Length: 498
Image 1 (cartoon, rainbow, N blue to C red):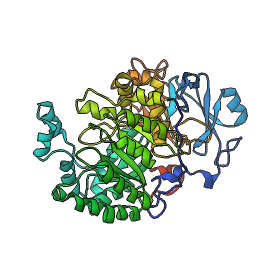
Image 2: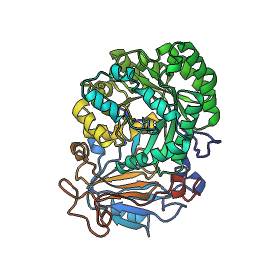
Image 3: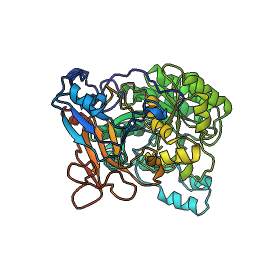
Image 4: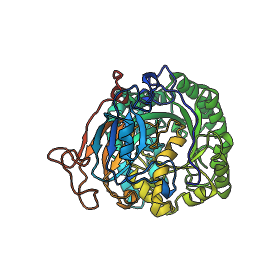
């Protein structure tokens, strides 16, 4: 990245009646309990993680930013220090220590674009497309987004929560500690509000930080196909005000693409959301250029996402908007294009070289990107979009945080940042995307508390093998993940579960 991400300040909220900026935010809001001071702070004794082969702070894509022979101190759920072990021992006398078995320590991954709350999968459509049936024919037969809409409308909020929880556990096992989740499979007022309520329900039950987005403008539902204007009026006059009043969503998104919503329709929708306190985001120029990137830049949106068909003018616009405060981020979703069988990817190299801020995300959804894990996205970013491994890691951490306008250090290993960390069982950060389709996540911490431990020993693993106290020591009798705590994020910080 040619420029480090920056973002605007956001208040914290878990209660839907409070500010909706980030669900489960209280575990990050340490100020009420005392931020860590030079001696470890008011929130309790410090803990030191040492022994990693590399620490990747993700504050920069400069190779010199990667640290060797360093350790990390944690106190009060935040990073209290980064430096030589002897230095941290002096700063934090009495701190407990854990020696990692080599490996690479990075910030927790930030997945800034998902649709993780949905009903059934759409593997039937995938099989049809694999047999040569065109997407439009699949849609004519009742597939596509509207298949998910019909399915979700018939499910309860509690059922949607139950279906989403295992997906969020998979995200966590792949290193994602912060993620955005969109509505958009309801496309009527009650179903969109139900989806947002389900997102809030999920946030109460998982360790990750969740950011909610209203996407009632995902598509025009079948019942309004003959009267698009009526659906636009419904969005602006009823659905967006209801979502804002509900107090769960922070962002308002729209699918700005030829054949879905054009730039003027998108502008009307997003301006209405902004009037009511929902910050704008866009699905833009995914498969066909429609000026969505330019619109995102003009509106000062948090991000323009997809960009598989962005124009040169769109690249220039996002480069300029990346220098704004807060910036507009170019969020790239290569797993979607892979799954759809496309051969042309978003021009990450051109965006970076122009000076844009780039984020990487999964687009986790049932129809075009059913992957909960960011590691394969890192591989695609390097192999298909000419990003370096370090650029990809920064885009999937600090870049994602910028796309969600989180300015508390999320996505970095820096003093004062949330202690959301991932330990990878590889000796070099370049091996994280190198191991195609292999999950090398060994440990995950959220707010400084271990939440996942996996045995990832084997070819390419760091260290000499798991042992007592090793970060690679997995669950007894097996190699699968062991979730050390299934408590919701607020509970991990000492607050009662909601």
